[in-house]
Image (cartoon, rainbow, N blue to C red; front, top):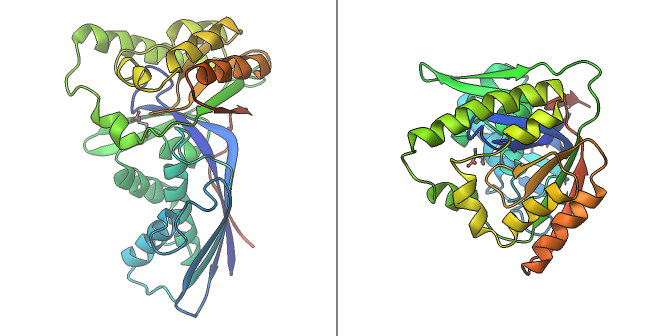
Length: 304
Ligand code: HSE
């Protein structure tokens, strides 16, 4: 039996929605799983992470798939996995969440789906520690999450029908900024004024993305809880944000914990991407440009 799992890239935080808001992007990892009887685990990777990601049991997709076998107490008799990766690793586009979800969904499908979608998402959130990448990767679209009585509730917010296209430009500098480090530098306590600043804006960012109101998005997409601490550590990031706005972006934010930046615009993002790339280059970093759309669809599992 062959299983194909497709999981999209995601951008978390969206400015003020730290650890709460996330959006699926139209950039996909596609992974094939074959159950074997040879008690071997083999992984091959083409595309992003090729030559860098582990190809044995230390691979994040394998670990997640084996977690499902453990949970249902079934032995794994062997796995052959092939990954076609388009989501850059360590970028702020949810590559580790995509790997986690891919493994959980692949293992689950190989075992005849002992867990439903909600249970897989719950498990992924528990393992990841915050919901803002895994939830939109699973559900698609714009997703807001809360913790309620020790349970995460993730809600996909319906997008307006016929909304005008929103162009998304992600620029990824060649800079190592692990999420663990990007979280460790944040203060444990926040000022009340900063909390109010973010709460009010997060509501309006959600509404602006839901309705496609780029003017409102531009006014609301700013943050005082994480970006002020993270941006100065990424060379050229503050200049790149400014350059994006000058080149016509309606709104720009750090994507997840970075180091990539994400810009939203009504028109095609070619000039915006080039302007951001130049700003990073002036700070001594090469940078890659991804011109994307958003995805209303989330993870998909097919039995081939
Ligand atoms: N909300 C998370 C953060 C996203 O900003 O640290 C990155 O995983």
